[in-house]
Length: 281
Length: 185
View 1: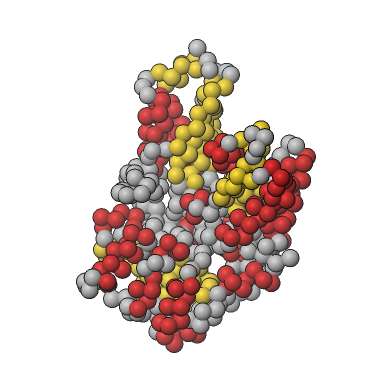
View 2: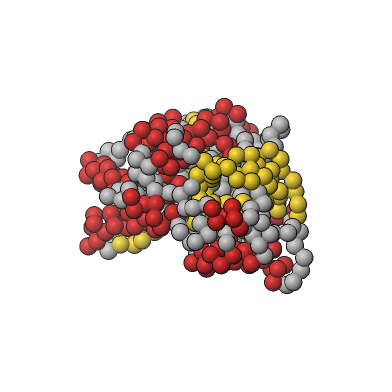
């Protein structure tokens, strides 16, 4: 068994959330630059220029690229030959989040009770932790600081299997159309197909984290991603929703086996400020 | 870029408000009041209860924002717009009190648009996610009231050349309704 201390986990989580909140991925920046070249609307180009300049300022100065520094979400792949020492695992993860948001001048956006009290917890915890046990003696941690302007525009639908590809297409495109300017386009469209109601949402969330430009390994899903991206960009919503041809930077689909009676579909929207970072311990 | 900006300064007169047309690019300078969900609820409730407000709203502009904390040496932390629709329930009450401009992002309700037409007001979009860029245009931030609301407190921001787009003008023309038509395929 390889021993990994909770202090190490706290330190890595702290670093990842600061890095994610200051630095946009090179994949997103490249997609924004491509958008700037092809965007037909003059206003749209102005918005894209502002976004690109913003992302460069944030990285250069080490400041939050969006004021909504998000709900702290972590995907953790824990090697089964790792022994955690020094304390409680979940406490260590939350301590890393707490330190990142305090030391990194990041906004604390979490409220305790969702319906009644809605009091800010003042340290951006608790984090959402998704844990998987995998072979090996390492821990891989991917964090995302998820903004809720786009999260609020996400949708779920339990389609009938007879709805087929056309049903999925209509649902995805309609979700983006109805969201209009609200999710801060250009967006990343994460689509989950299959599984159960909760696992489908996770498929969609993970799809938002796939690098922009990387296609699904299955050629049928890769084609669907390409078709949906084209169809969404034909909606005309454009940067900031002010009209234009750059509405989405990517459509990423993840799929999984499901029950014979269902075709679950989740569309998880993310703004152009898709903040995520990964490390392996 | 060949885009032409209209330069305006707060407070806004009816004349300036009605000279702005949907789709105009604007650089706004002067003072704006940062106010979002909880602050709107509190202000609208105070108006309905006949209580005095911490500021005189006439001619003023509110900015829907909950900034990140300011790092040392910065006047403001990152401060991009938040989604405006969450303020819709309270907005007509504020417009009746003389509010002239709103800065946010995203769709507004029919009630808000009707009240804007009635009260001569303008709705601007700031670029969602351009928070670090916008923070550089904020020169000073002062806490005015509702301190207990934390990131949602009422703050006065002094801004210089804040880049905005007129989405809904005082006649109710709405770029979110018309902007996509030209690019729809």
